[in-house]
Length: 135
Image 1 (tube, helix red, strand yellow):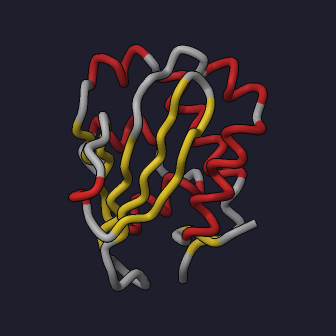
Image 2 (cartoon, helix red, strand yellow; image 1 turned 30 degrees about the vertical axis):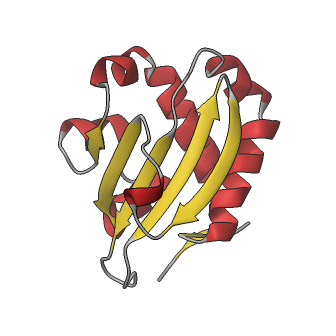
């Protein structure tokens, strides 16, 4: 399994989302792409932008970008490397991170809140493909 953050990790996450029957069932009504902006912190020395096109329980595309000029996602999640790492390690609840602004979210929060099971299962899948974090 790959190390977060890396393009290998991003592609592994996309494959996991496409192969996971539980995620497909829970996210069957989800419509919306998203981008993660991982801000430099600790061992991460550059800003990373990861994009996922999520549609009805599948990942149609995953890509790394230099910036947001190339995509206009429905949802934008932004945090320092440390908070993303804590979420992936299970030390920080993703919904709590959103509510306390440790994870900044731009997009329709009503849609996000109506789809909490989808959000949580997405995080489960991300955790399952994360072998380690950058140290």
